[in-house]
Image (cartoon, rainbow, N blue to C red):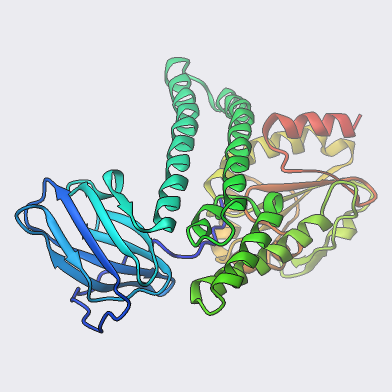
Length: 383
């Protein structure tokens, strides 16, 4: 289950719409020609972290045409909306003269825009994303079909899921490389902000930094760019922490309270091979993985294997109930601070379940071990 941190550019809120008549001195204009229109109202709205704001509106005439020219936009993300579920994304700047063509019944999938280079680039990124979704959906369909036709039990389903994870990761890697290449060709383009958030900072930090530099040079006073700059700074700090927990390094110390409120230090488990298991009672994938973790614990605990469960819960009762319900017999700790947990900061946790395997001397042996991979690694380590 992922912890998601994105600029809320596509946030949708409820508000009353009105035409903005603040005055347009830049010559900005949007002209549209829409097929299958029924004389609806159409709205231009600005998207920002604070929400959605109506900036201009028009009535689509009997020919399917409309004009908006009351508003002069600052560089940013906008949407052209007929209804809350029928809209097209735009990336606009002042003084542009935009021509829109689309089917009024499906703006998002049919619109074309001339006169806005960033909108054109946004559509190119969107086409790449749609192609990627088709490919990843095909893997999901394979899994669902196998579950139904072969009537897989939970163990065989987990095994298949792990096997399909490998081609999925290849797809993600290949797609990410294509997106990163395109971003590096458009380092001063506003549209690249949305595209880059599909990339893992730990793998593409140089691209994040390069885009941040290009956008800050072109738009030094833009609020969205300043927000993106803050996100890049956070990514840099997170990547630095990730570097500290690479295989071969000494595992950073953890000292957190157990259910009895007494502190337990990770270093107190030295002399055993320890799996740090980051989980939470509210995390469905974590709960699904726990039976496998339990099997490994029973199989290897007599050979010097221990587990330290580190929960990202915030509700003490829910945490304790999950420990009892799941029958977890290994040490459990939590500061009950959710994603703000000290453990998250120290180990740069971005999603759970997440595991770190350390040897008897406290050195990191592996990370992100699940399913059969965990059993295989333990068999290798605990010969």
